Image 1 (cartoon, rainbow, N blue to C red):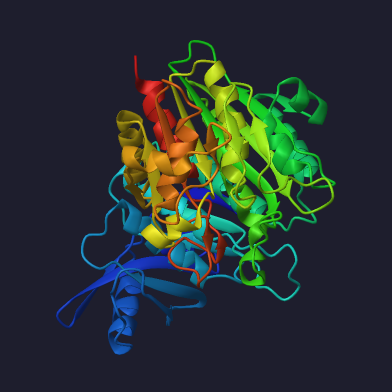
Image 2 (image 1 turned 180 degrees about the horizontal axis):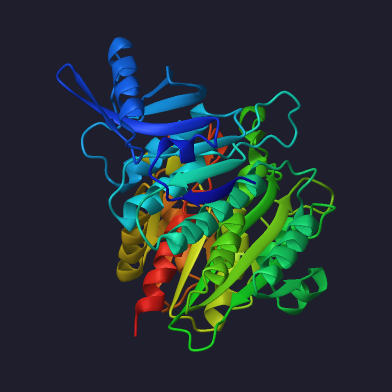
Amino acid sequence: MTNIKLFKESEIDAAAMASGVIIGFSKNDAAVKLASSITAPEFVAECESALKTLRASDKTAAVTTLTAPSYQDLLVFAVGLGTEPDLDELRQIAGVGIRAAAGLEEVTVALPHSTNAELEAISEGALLGAYDFTRYRSDADKPVSTINIHSTLSDVESIIERSSIIAQNVNSVRDLVNTPANDLNTESFAQYALTEAQAAGCSVHVYDLAQLHKEKLAGLIAVGQGSANEPKLVRIEWNPSEANGFTALVGKGIMFDTGGYSLKPSSAITEMKTDMGGAATILHAVITAARLKLPTKVVGWMCLAENMISGKATRPDDVIVYRNGVSVEINNTDAEGRLVLADGLIMATDEEPDAVIDVATLTGAQMVALGERYTGIMGTDETREEVLSAAQNAGELAWGMPLPEHLKSSLKSDIADMKNTGSRYGGMLTAGLFLQRFVGDIPWAHIDIAGPSFNREGAYGYTPKGATGTMMRTLVHYLEEKALEN
């Protein structure tokens, strides 16, 4: 885990305690202007001269590595600032600078900032950018282990602490999603959730298979019955005294998804260890709320199962009946996520929260519609817009999507109340319409992270290749807003 420290001294000698320093710069015609919280004249002049000689690009997040002649033991990572970077661009700039410094043990971040919000974005971006999943690699450069944040602002310790808590929990989501299913199954995930949530001050209850039957949680039982690893439902709660509001979070936790008897092709079955990203996201959103001591009640429901093939596995054409009486014909066993989420939504809404939000790597149709970086958000109007606003405040890409009434007919079944999949087109929307059946009149948002949860291309900004931890920060921003209400 990367640690973060705060340095307030204004001279370069303080920053030189590290072996690398990250600064910003911009260009005006032929002139290069350094932008850094370090203002030592000799350092500034030497860096500006080197950047001019190298014809370095000041495009936002472009990195140039150099040394200043008077500080030969110090690697300087100069990152282009573009024109007046916003908060998320500052996160990206800090993240790409830290990634460039991989292999160094200790690095100082001395990017320019004049407000607490800018400092928070920089420290958050640096910690997110430092992440690298190296658990199984023997030849990887070690990520930066200590980040010195250089700031001359006063009373910023709480800002650094907050950004550290949030970034570390995003990185924990990334760890879970990156871990292969032979090391992370329903049992080990439940044990991890129990340990981590209790350590944060949350209460935890794990529903085993016998309790799933007792509670008539038909979706979890049906999806998980083909696996040697039994399905589970994990409930965690953060409930401080004098809490403002009550939000329920529900996460899809398919530890591995073969598609069941609607078997995925070999090209699509890889990366299916990531199908538990929703459960990982809501777990650490609740833990973050507890670590930040947010004065709002939050209950998280993690719906855990493996979708496997065996003599006990659910078949296409099977019909299941949920505890609320809704019967579902399973016409596609590879649309299993909505089946387990339905159980979580029923359990969550039974407790009558002010709002319920589910998070899931739910549909390939989400990627077809929005690509691999934008999250799709559906639900009741007010809650959907509140989540979209939280995403904007967090600097995460999200887009509101409709739940068209006319598409409900595609979910009609001849022998049950509904099918689990609809027509070929609008698959993200019909999945949302399926889930809508299980939330009643409770304000609700559905977050489909199928594309953005896993970066299949190269790293960029503060986003690594592999698991991204997307929407965890959005949920925290949403919960912070709820804590301020009433």
